[in-house]
Length: 176
Image 1 (cartoon, one colour):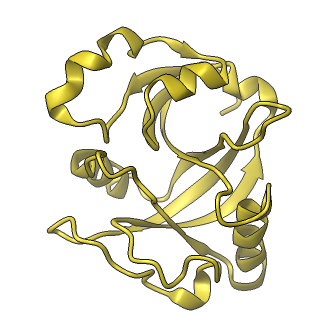
Image 2: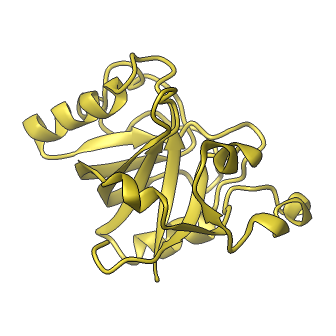
């Protein structure tokens, strides 16, 4: 089983599907883009996971769009090239606003991910996700998620039970 970080998102400030389109447009023109992490206020920054990913760069991650009402969610694979954050956990602007979609390139966020190569995954990939951990879930509430760990995520309800935006999953497949 291969393991991956998943960043969960919805098109809240763009039209449906436009978040991916805007990032892809920058990648096509400039080679890469910056993806900002809009974490929930109660989520913690998973510094250990980010350090692990930095040591593997470039590495594949997944972007999971949970905003599709009629046909569930869409999953995209992207290649992570860099991570920008601060040692203190404070917020920062995009490292390169010109490589960031205009709808949020002036926002101050906790973490920015430099990515390229966003490709839609076949829908069947979503049915192969096994939740390994929720790295941004507050440590003092770990007992609340024990029942979800090592379980397969197959529905929107599975995703919404624990409302966090950073997941660490295993995917059982030979083609990931």
